[in-house]
Length: 291
Image 1 (cartoon, rainbow, N blue to C red):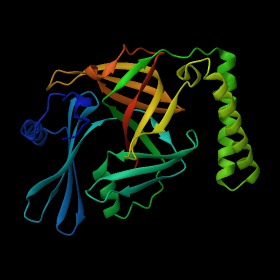
Image 2 (image 1 turned 60 degrees about the horizontal axis):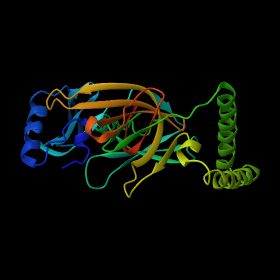
Image 3 (image 1 turned 135 degrees about the vertical axis):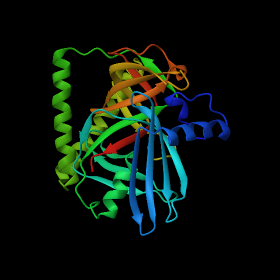
Image 4 (image 1 turned 180 degrees about the vertical axis):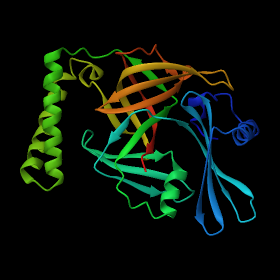
């Protein structure tokens, strides 16, 4: 059973038998069906069924030469709405099934970002037609969460926001130069990290850490596409899973200049989400790559 089914409104699914009913519903009435050849006698097919605006279930299977369909795996999804641009996005196949992980270097975070690729059939098709060597640089991020808390926002006036933007721009320039081997930039980044650590060590004794750190985006757990984030809420949308009638909150977040949508079941969210507040929780990061 996929632990993130509850994030799209299926919190009561506890057995394979209950899941089979959703399987059949998805196969019988898919909103999208994408098929592509992956070998001489095999075709990959991806069924997507929306159970509410932007949320749904995807089934990944194969047709053999005799026309027999076998479902290999499934995943719940939330469709993102805003493209993010990167210098380069690398896609790697996962070893145990026909699924892919996207990898990109993010200067905003100063680390490598890894996400689960949603448009599996599209990328498999590009591989078959030898298009997979094209330069990939755009992705729509989204995420599912099964535990989250609403925090108050951190107040910033115009001058402080302007100062932070200038600091971010200077840091991105340093990171870019350091990546290209600039030793002076590397030294400056090291000094900057030491100054930040010293400042935080002094402030955290008198202030709450969540009032010092506005947003954060950190790897979480042993799975490479799971993160613990704190993000500013830009928009809140409540949708209903029309099969289970459970309410799902879709939050448009900004975290370390990354824009993404997060879906979370109303039952799993502590606090009332509102624009201007913050969300803190663990997420499973997904992405639709522009092929």
